[in-house]
Length: 355
Image 1 (cartoon, rainbow, N blue to C red):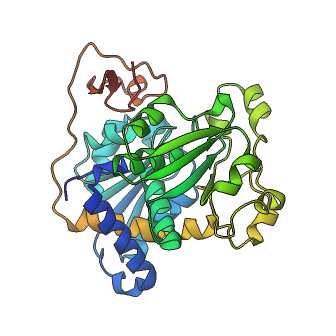
Image 2 (cartoon, rainbow, N blue to C red):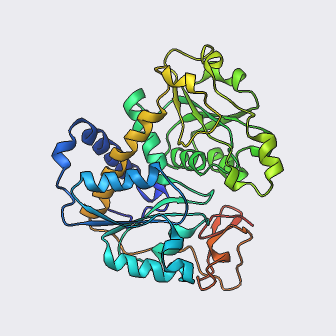
């Protein structure tokens, strides 16, 4: 396998991604056939911020493969509360485990951890940056329900500015050359970041903008709802103003195609009413279940293949300083300063922030 770590889903080749998705669907059909595939292996889940689905689906995935799980879901119950660095925690935990899944509020944290880990690291979400295993879950669900990943019209609705799940989905589909039309449904304040639209501009994907869910929903094959993320706002006042702008309810569902599927990375707050749960097109709970099969398949690929060595950088630059206040380099000052070129832009190697 080309990638030892999964920081971004595009660390896989298209061939590898296809194999992971196909295996996930095979696991879904016959989970018993995979029950002992990771016997004797240990997964460490290092979760520096709250999670229900991602942490528990990783743990369930490893247990269903016959492996064991260690780790934490509250860093304040560990030596992190005493000031232990990400580097030291990673070195210690990778000595105990065969594979690590890490969730962290700072962007670029998973890549920083992979610099020091002696086992594969899977990014389980780094701030508002990326969430590759959620994207893998999304792609497994789409392939399962639509039979294809090509030619779909996908509406992304809600907090597109801070939503790492929608960033990862667009980035992955674009870089894998999967043709789709994205409809970005949001307010101007929460619109998709420019770096994502620039990636789409250099891909087979197309996109359009819309500020009305009612207007957009009739044309969609897939509606991907997201919550307005309170924890990503610097201003409570701004969050309160925007939190209920987009709400999916049965009236809006009446305007949608009969074969629309509604996805959501969860948790939901108020953006999908409970009444929608009874609509057979509402697949967000099924999507969460697919996340277990997706993560089982990914764990198998990382542990069963002979991995390449470590993380490679575009280039270290001692004078480079990331402009992103949420970058992991702001809290872990020992990290080597590094950047890479993306067209005309200079980008942080950890969080992809552009200068």
